[in-house]
Image (tube, rainbow, N blue to C red; front, side):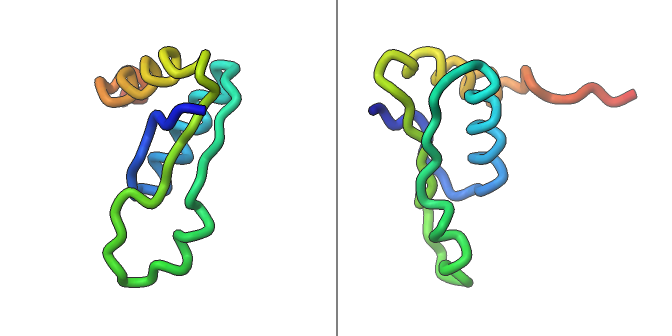
Length: 76
């Protein structure tokens, strides 16, 4: 298993998780149970996404595409 994402934004992590699953990758999102217990404590990097070793390159490509804005919706 390879870690491909580490962050603290729950919605971003869920979005990336969904994009990777949609691409057919087996994805594991860890740290979501900590979200409710954090309260006002500043915790960074408690969410992580891991994938199978063979899927690391594809997962990284998906994250890079997301960061470039390739998945943004166009305004009409």
